[in-house]
Amino acid sequence: MQSTVLTVVAGSVLALGTVAYDGHQAMAQPSEATTQAAPDFTAAVAAGGRVQADIKLDESRMPSKILAFMGLKSGDAALDIFAGGGYYSEIMGAAVGADGSVVAVNPPQFVSSDAAKAKWAGISERQPGVSMLPSQLGDFTPAPDSYDFAMMHLIFHDLYWESEKFKVARMDPAAFLSKLYAGMKPGGIVAVIDHVGNAGDTRVVVEKTHRIDPATAKADFEKAGFVLEAESDMFANPDDDLDKNVFDPAIRGKTNRFVMKFRKPT
Image (cartoon, rainbow, N blue to C red):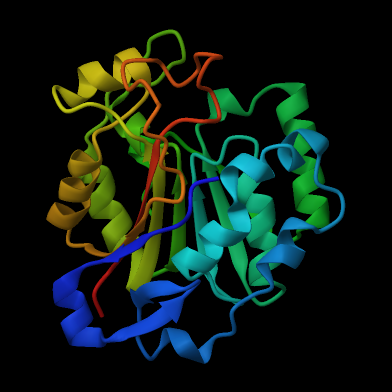
């Protein structure tokens, strides 16, 4: 497993100072956030009832480290964008506790099967604070200043994806991020983990590999008004062939992934 190296935006360090994080330097949280408790993420991951297929992903996804790094708090109102089978939704639901909530957004065509419905019913039963909202990503419009935390796990690149087969219409990433920015509370966090892709025409790269250039993600979020607070190389894999599709069995689950923590300024 790659060791974690946390790189912090230098200008923000001067403004906010630093605190120790897992032996490295991390950004100090704004004072509003420190009034909430940090959950026991290990306990959230170990919560009973999770399906074995999800549990098997824990080693490669390191959810407790990710959520601690990103700063999810007990009582947060959280989003899980394009939540898929609810891997992070369920863990986040356990972490935010009874005073928090998780809204999982999913394009309806990806959760229409009986198996998907049964899985989501199980998640909602185990974590009553988790609700699933069927919505095309391009149509999703959160109410202003509604969310403390948003997870975008391996899906930011999908804002550049379009597929007639999977009924995914062409989207405008800038418009999506503008609405997300409005929906986050001041000081709210957006967690972004995605597969590292080559530079070039983003839509071409995404169509071929389901990857995205980290520089593109960073620029898109900053253009929307978010501030990059910290990054980590905990999923770095220098042996990953960036020309391979992430679903290639040779690399699936072991891709070189970037980790970025963005915040809406207060």
